[in-house]
Amino acid sequence: MKFGGTSMAGTERIRRVANIVRKQAAGGNEVAVVVSAMAGETDRLVNFCREANALYDPAEYDVVVASGEQVTSGLLALTLQSLGCKARSWLGWQLPVRTVEAHAKARVDSIDGEALANSMAEGEIAVIPGFQGVSEDGRITTMGRGGSDTSAVAVAAAVKADRCDIYTDVDGVYTTDPRIVAKARKLKAVTYEEMLELASVGAKVLQTRSVGLAMKEGVRVQVLSSFVGDDAVPADELPGTMIVSEEEMDELVEKGEVERQHVTGIAHDKNEAKIILTRVPDKPGAVAHIFEPLAAASINVDMIIQNVGRDKGETDVTFTVPQADLARAQALLEDKREDIGFNRIITDSQIAKISVVGVGMKSHAGVAATMFKALADRGINIQAITTSEIKVSVMIDEDETELAVRVLHTAYGLDAADEAA
Image (cartoon, rainbow, N blue to C red; front, side):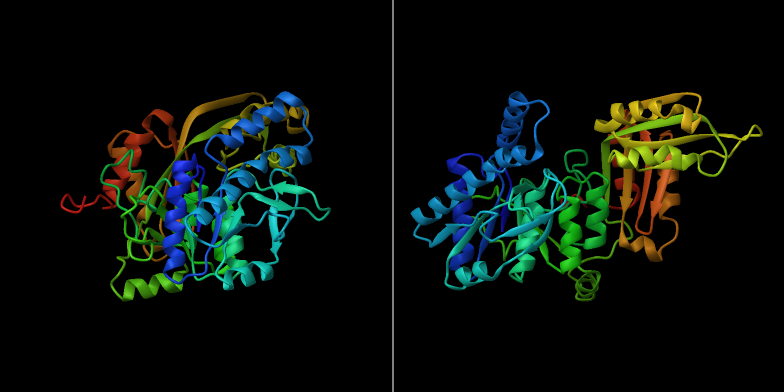
C-alpha cells in the first residue's frame, strides 16, 4: 500500500491512513506500506537547501530532502501501534533499497526483501519511506518527484506481493481529467502500455517510471482514493482502477467485466514549449548538431518536425521541450549557432499537447482521422503531430486545451451516460 503526501498531511490524516492499513491487516493480509512526505514538506526542505547553498552538493541535498519521508514513516508506525497493531519502520538503508545513477534522480537497482518478508510473515506491518534509497557507496539517495510510486512498485516486486495499491487524491484512472469533462468515466482496468503512454503525456496519476517497473516485474497495481470515510468499503471490495497486463485485460473483456474501447483515455499537457530553428542546412548531420547538445544537458525532446527542404538546401526544424527547460535549451542552441548554421530561433510556450491513447488502435484504423476531423470541425488548428502504436498526440494553442479535450472525449464516445454519471 502506498500513500501520497496529501494523505499524510497531518496527524488526523495519518490516523485515517492507519485505519485503512489496519483493515487490510485485519483481513489476513501481510502488509507493507510506503509513504511520502507530508504535502508541501519536500518543497520546504528543497528551499532550505537553496538558501544554505545555491550551488548545493546533490548528495547533501538528498540527505535533507529524504528526511521528509523518514518523519511520516515513523509517525505512521507510531499511530498503528496506538491502534494495537504490530508495526515498525524500515528506512531505505535498512532494507536496503539499492539505487544507481545520479543523486536526486536515482533509479532502483535492487531491494533485499528477505528481512522485510520475514517480519511481515510474523504479522508485523512494515512502514517504508518512499523516494529514498542508498547508493553503492552507502550514501542516501532520492528518486526524483513522484519517486514514492516507484518505491512502492519495487517493494511489491521484492516481496512478490499479490497487489500494489497506490492510494492517491483521485479514486482511479479516468477517461480524461474529470475537472475538464464532468462526464469522464472511471476505468475499471487499464493495460500497462496504456498507463505508460497516459503517464508520459500528461496524466498525473502515476510516475512514468513506476508504471515501467510494474510492467517489467509484472506487479498488479491498483489506483484508489485515500479520501474515503471511515465507514467506507475496504479496497478489496471497492476497487479503483487496476493496471494489468494485456493478457489479464483480455480475460476481463472475455468475462464481460470490462468493455473494450478503441480509445481508453485523453491526456493533456500544458508544460511544453515549442522551438523553431529557421533555415537549417538541409544536409546529413545537421539535425544531430541540434539534438546532441540538448541530450548532453538531459533535456527531453518530444515532437520533432523537419519541413521539406526548399530549393536553397535549407529547412526549418520544429520541436518541443518541457517548458521548464526552454530557457536552457535556447541558451544552448544560441551557443551552438555556428555549428548548426540556423538563421533564427523562434519560441512559443503557449502551446499544449493533447494525446489520445488506446491499445484498441493497434487493430482499428481511423482513430487519427476521427481526431483530426473533430478538431477541424471546431476550428482548432493542429501545429504538429506524433504517433506511436497506441497513441496519437497533437500540438495546439494552449487556450484551446479544454475545448479540445471535451470535443475528443465526445467524438470517441467516452462520455458517461447521464444515468451512470
